[in-house]
Length: 342
Image 1 (cartoon, rainbow, N blue to C red):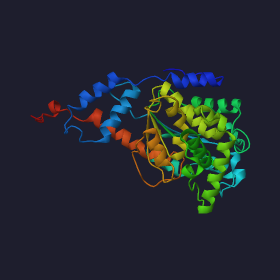
Image 2 (tube, rainbow, N blue to C red):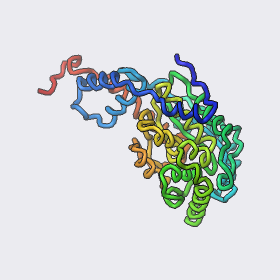
Image 3 (cartoon, rainbow, N blue to C red):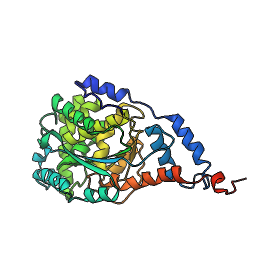
Image 4 (cartoon, helix red, strand yellow):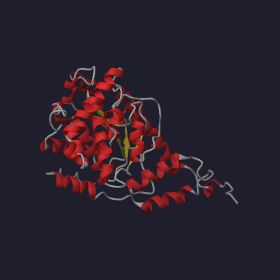
């Protein structure tokens, strides 16, 4: 089993990890396609399940993809920008929800149990808040690299499928700022209701994002610096986990708006940087569909979720398992003695 990656010691090392991503195994992909064409069904009749099976196999680097060792990683972090009144919830809720996860009381605990997936919760930077990014970079370089390394270290080599999720009061504001920094459009384009803002609250949130964009404008040409200046500990950890998963040949299911924003710098830095990921669902948070389009991601589910916690990613696990089960378990026309298409 391959060992975990060495944590990057500086931005140059992190950038090198992002720019030297391994490719998919296209020989496995072609073998899956050939086998799929022999199964007892009309070609293409399983729709996106067929593509999911090929995606899983080419990133696991096997013509017989697996779905047994599935992990859900939930990264938690706190945000100094909550001092700007961008959320009606107190920052203490992040720590309280981490305890709720660990005690089995949250929605993701139930989803993980039903999906037969292992759930792990990581409190990044011991839940110390980032700086208020309207006043200073959200993370100084050591804190940013530590958060990236935390995410990388959480990924277990040999995992069949990884789901990413998060918890952090104020992190929809950070996600909106990251999206605006990467793709433009300003706060009004990306700020949504989060955990329950009214119209006035959304307008205020957008203004806070715009102040942050103005404060950090000289650094927004670099996607990694966008994350450092405007992101959060848990967002950086999810980015680190996505990078590590790619290097370990692990397919990844992304959750909602915050999770997708967290990995977006990888997609901007490197064409194809997110090919090992699939978007599990489209969140009800207003910017998520726009972000998915910008990254070329097509959601597997659309259930109106806006919870976070990896809930949408967890719900998509059975789809991937069904896809691989059909590929590996169905009989061929010859085995079933069923007449093929003339």
